[in-house]
Image (cartoon, rainbow, N blue to C red; front, side, top):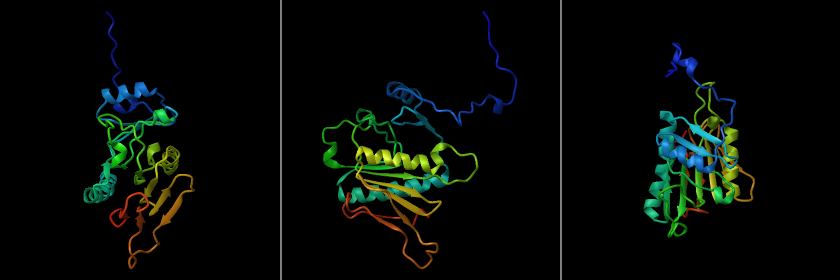
Amino acid sequence: MTTATAPQQSVDTLLLDVTNAMLTVTPEHFDQLCINNPDLRLELTKDGELIVMAPAGGESSEKNGDLFGEVWYWNRQTDLGRAFDSSGGYDFTPLGGGKPAPDVSWIEKSRLDGVKIVGFIPVVPDFVIELRSPLAQAELSATDNLKPLQEKMKEYQRLGVKLGLLVDPKSKQVEIYRPGQEAEVLKSPASIASLAPLEIDCNEVMPGFVLSMSRIW
């Protein structure tokens, strides 16, 4: 029997650099990858591209928690639907989409009547939030760049998400996506010391819900 032995070298030289590579899998293989790798956060684009996301840094995790907390608290008070955090995945493949996991999402209660959500949620959410990660270093994954997130928001828009927010703490702005409309950009003033924080009125989809950016930047 022949045994192969890994060469004695530093760990760095054993890393696989896929920075400029596109990894594609079928929806079925994606499901199996999720089962086999429960500790990884994976997404699948509509084109079959596999997105592997590293754990969020403390700053992003805190901000994402604040955003989800705002939605969760409003929903607990109104009982109008069900809220999901960034670990909740969706299955849009029957609609020609992928299998994303928004940072925050919400679905009106009646739309989930009789729907099993043990696995990926097969219903397009009414509301989503995506949070742009801080650009702390030059070496960034594709998910940290703004353009891929904007494409992701346009895909939500195409699928029929009624209201989508792309929150960008770096530039202190929020891009608002609605079906059939150009994205609306709301930007905080350069100086907000004496001004009220930027607030996003989500009443059109979530009655009475106003999302404040006071804890995000």
